[in-house]
Image 1 (tube, one colour):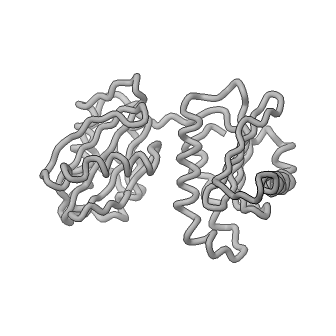
Image 2 (tube, rainbow, N blue to C red):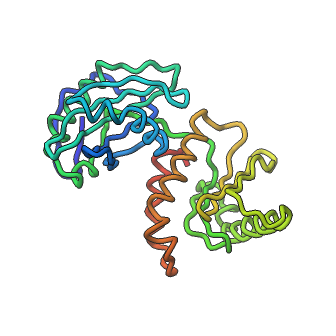
Length: 272
């Protein structure tokens, strides 16, 4: 069932939930430009890779389907003409060992395109929740932080039962910042997209990486990490940059309230 925040649209749906790694709905202009309308469980780079590979085929055909394998994941694309010109495209991915059920995906996509996709505005599509598709959340995350290089903490979320980490979260942010500053000094002032891996903290691992001058750090439980953990981390890091870098971080004025809503994204991808 496709559920809107205010209205309900019934479509003929599969009798069983679809177990997928990710799903994306996007629009493509006749010139090949894309706008993502709905995205969950699929990395932006994966979307771009698929679209770039099949852009010509999609533009030059009225409708169709494409099957592929990308980054050891099965991918299925369904596309058709949109009333607003260009194309509307649905992308589904699953783990390589999990075969995609094309019949069920076609039923879901057909209902989506007929009820919503062809004439609907982008604003309405952004409000969709697709309940027939279950994107698995990753296990093993204890704490997640996003901060700048001075140690200013933009966002953090820690498991409720890890009160010691929560209590010292600002000191931890300062420690991470100092660690990276001294690491930079030790490598002759180089400032690459740093990634520090596998700092052993007993029963936990600690990871730090930098993307666009934002430091991301996270604690994980050694013996409780699911296979989709690393992929989901990459997705939430990308979402943080997409959502906050240009509008807030590049022109930061001290207001941290816009970052509070990122907790919803963490909850979508992790059991924490």
